[in-house]
Structure formats: structure tokens, C-alpha cells
Length: 165
Image (cartoon, rainbow, N blue to C red; front, side, top):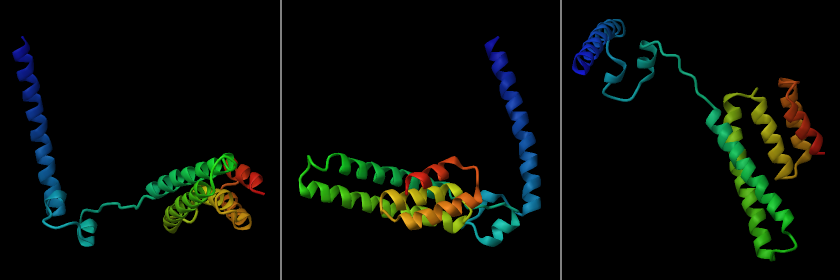
């Protein structure tokens, strides 16, 4: 029984492949060739010829910037909490590490905002970074205001603006 049911499954999969094969041939005729058969990397004309919709996503920049922001803020907190217990060289290392990761986060948020200036989430985190790590409260308030103009109901922007003063 099991061999006959497995044979039926194989026949059905072959039928499906045959149907899909016809569809692939039809697409090849429409587009000229299969998308993955190009000898070289995609050229703009090839992307246009297959009528692809290409959109650059900025989620990676936002995620990396946010992770670096969190690391930087945690380092600052550790610096403040253990200021009396640590030696001067450990304190200066923590401060330098916080600024180093903060600068990397700024680069990621800048890359994100170059793609989409209306990303209120990136602006909100950018403002928090400027306020908490770099102590630039005036600039952070301007950035919070810009984020608030984009999304007036974003609670985190309002909260960060309130605590950064």
C-alpha cells in the first residue's frame, strides 16, 4: 500500500513540475530568458526587462543603529553606576567606548535617514543617542520635534523629549 501511495505522490509531483515547466517556458518567452540565467550580475536594463520592483530597505541600518545605541547607553550607565568604584583608566575606557559605539550608531541612523527622511522611529532613536550619549540636548530636541511632526501619536518620541530636558 505504501509503495502505491508513494508512486501516486511522485506522479502528482511530476505533473506539477510539468505544469510549472510550461509556465517557466512561457515566462522565458515573455522576458527573453530566465532571470537566474544571466551570465553576469544584474544590469539595470535587465532589471527593467523583467519588470522587477526594486526598493532599498533601510531596516538593517535602523536595527544596527538601535543595537549600537543600546550598547552605548548601557556603557554610559555602567560608567555612571561604578564611577566611584573604578580607577580612572577604566572610567575613561568606558566613556570612550560609549562614544565610539555612539558614533557608529550615528552613522547607521544617518544611512537610514538618507533613504527615508520621514522615518520617525530613526529620528526618535537619533535624538535619544544625541541626548543620552553626546549630551547635545538642544539638537536632540530639534530632532524630537521633527519626529513628532511626522507622527504626532508616537509616544516614545514624546517620552524621550520629556526626559532629555
